[in-house]
Structures are given as structure tokens and as C-alpha cells.
Image: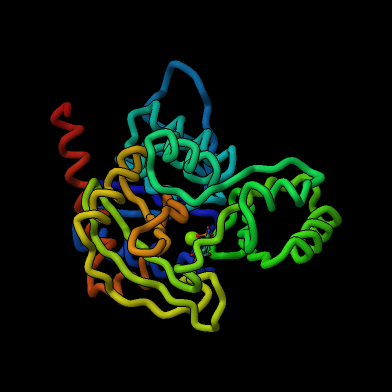
Length: 305
Ligand SMILES: Nc1ncnc2c1ncn2[C@@H]1O[C@H](COP(=O)(O)OP(=O)(O)O)[C@@H](O)[C@H]1O
Ligand SMILES: [Mg+2]
């Protein structure tokens, strides 16, 4: 069995994906699955009716893989999505599907879908530029969380305590990148510096951990150097995350929940979650879980299910 991991960098030894990719390759070997890493830009697609069993990689006609695992998350470009869609049309199974990646890479789009089915999300607005600060104050209030639509690892997320600090941030944005789309979100204060990351694979929870910021920051991203600890999930959380994964049609999902009093609100959903911290915290082999599901899913597909 042959699988391709689609990744942004040709040199995947560049952080932050090193661990996940190497682990998938290693586990693949154990399971008799050959996995190679390709950049979407290495691949050319020709849309025609003939030769539907191959694709061009570095200009050479190459047989199709049995499956792909795109790992570009919020950084998935139009080109990458077009490629994934093309491979899907040629019968290659993508973990996750192009459509689900497209939805999830946009933090507002995923909320629009989840809100439709009554899932608990923090109050969120998309405002037009130039921003009317009072509209944000009226609808969301302060402190307010400001996010770029497609950020990851906490890089595009800011907390503005007051109208003045929001004003300053907006001036900076207008000067540096006036075309950026921003969302403004209720700050869930009981979750300050802490969140719950749950990973689901094929409709099962494979691990959950609490992430705590190391430096008193409000952002709990593991990649920012916080601490992680295994979390025993409750039936409530299990139902919530599986429902989210199902609504967004994700085979593999990293779901971040915020602690909201004695309940939860959804922070964001990722289509290619990192799992280094989770494997450590839960003493689990997430790469193996992913590949076992891949095998199971492809077996079912072969049997026409
Ligand atoms: N509305 C919010 N209330 C409280 N904390 C938040 C909120 N939104 C984000 N955070 C914190 O900021 C971190 C990063 O936000 P997130 O939307 O997950 O961005 P990224 O995609 O960059 O990881 C979260 O893990 C969480 O700790
Ligand atoms: Mg996050």
C-alpha cells in the first residue's frame, strides 16, 4: 500500500511537522505501508478523460497512491486543494477530504457550520474595515479576542483588554495589511491560558489533554511551549467532539475546547493536528491509530462500502 503525505515544505525536517511526519513514515513501515512526502507544487495535474491512473510528479508520470494525508492545515493553498480534489476524483482517498479541509481552514466558516447545528461556540463576528470599535464593544464587549481567519499555532490571535488597545491593534493592521480578514470573539475568561485538545480519528476519540500556557499568556498552544497533561474525557465531551467531527466530515480532527464555567465552548477545529504533545501526555501511538484507520477505511472502500 502506498500513501502520500502532502506537506508545505520539501524539507519536512523543518519544524513544526518533523515529528508527525517521521512518526507516520515509521509506523507505516511497521504496517507495510510505504509513505512518501510530497509538496503539492511538485505535482502537475492534467484534467482529461484518458490516463486516469497516473499523475505527473516532477514531470514524470507516476502511478496514483492508494491514499493521501494532507498536512497543510490552515496553510492549504488553492493549488493544494485543487490537487486534493483531483486525486479524489481519480479515486484516491484523502484523509481528510478536500471539502472538509477547505471548510476547516477558515475559522469563521467552521463556526458557521457548527452554529447551524446549535454547537456551543463563543460569540464571534466578522467586521468590516475600517472597524467601528463601538460595534465590537456593543456586540462582543471587552476583553475581546481578535483572530486572523487562517492563523495557526497562536500566531494570529490577540487579546485586547480595552477599546484603546483594540484601536492600537487596528491601526497597526491597517498600516501593515489592510486586506486581512479578522474575526472578533468573546473572551472565555475561565479558560485563560488553558484549553482542552481532543483528537478524533475515524469517529473515535484517541486522546485528550489539557494544555496550559507556560508564561501566563492567554494562549495555550503546545507549540508556544506550554505544558500538557492527559485528560479523562466525560461522555459530554465525547459526544460533543464526535458530533463536531461528524458535522465537519473530518476523518482526523484536532478539536480545541475552551473551559466555560462547568461546560465547554469550541475554540477551533484543525484538520491536520499535531500529535507530539498528545502522544507524550496520553502515552498513545496516534500515528498508529491514524494508519490503522486508513487501512480499515480502504478495506471497506475495496469492498464497496
Ligand atoms: N475566545 C477565546 N477565549 C479564551 N481563550 C481563547 C479564545 N480563543 C483562543 N483562545 C486561546 O488562544 C489559543 C489560540 O487560539 P486558536 O483560535 O486556537 O488559534 P490557533 O489556530 O493559532 O491555534 C487557544 O488555544 C486558546 O488557549
Ligand atoms: Mg489552536
